[in-house]
Length: 295
Image (cartoon, rainbow, N blue to C red; front, side, top):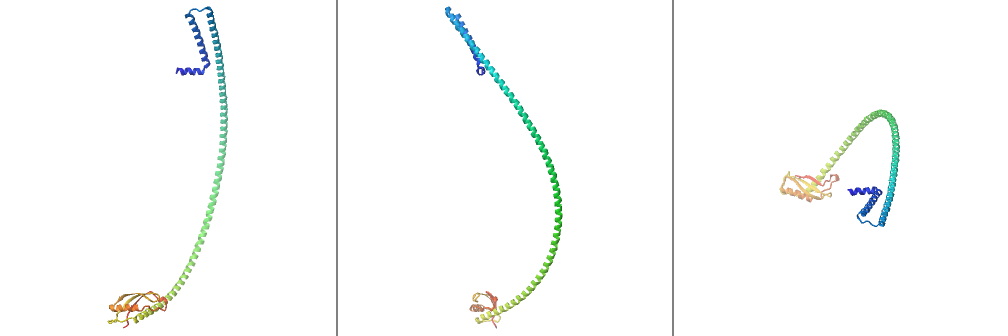
């Protein structure tokens, strides 16, 4: 710690420390010469004069050097003081410049605040005027909408009345048309029913004639069995193609003997092809009829 403090002192005042070292060296030399003179034998006078001259010369040189170092130290101190004064002056100038800059900044802020307040006041005035104008426009718009609504209600009411009248007329006309169409339909249905009844009657007569013709045709191929009762009969189901060719025969109900049943089935098979009806509407692929021999 002591060495560090001494080194810091030497760095801060090198000239003063050099001068102090030199003075101490001169003192040590003088002390050394004095000690030598008292302890050693007295030299010759000539040698003593040389020694004294050397000591005087060295002391003068040391003093001159000390003066030189002192002047250099004073000059350095003066330069340091000048530098400090210059630094202080620069710091003072900087402080004044900073104060002037702060004042300019404050003036600018004040002017900016005044301008903003003025602009804000103008904006508030414009907003108030715009708000009043908007309110006036809204009043006019509401009045306009109310009038349009009233006119629309009148038009809607008139439209509804016209629609109701048109609907009533359309309904009356539609009812008239419906009645006429219904009457016409009933007339046509009656005519159609008459035609259908007549046609059904005609077809039924033809069908009866066709079945009678088939039974007669089968009877011609039927061979009566040895034992035969008067009331024997068989219900026959026949599948045929459009040419009258028999595809299959099915005996449904027979109240006679097995021989009678077999004779009827053989007669039907031998009757293929069956007669063709005069009217194609009478033809049917599936025929069902009662085969009953004549007494």
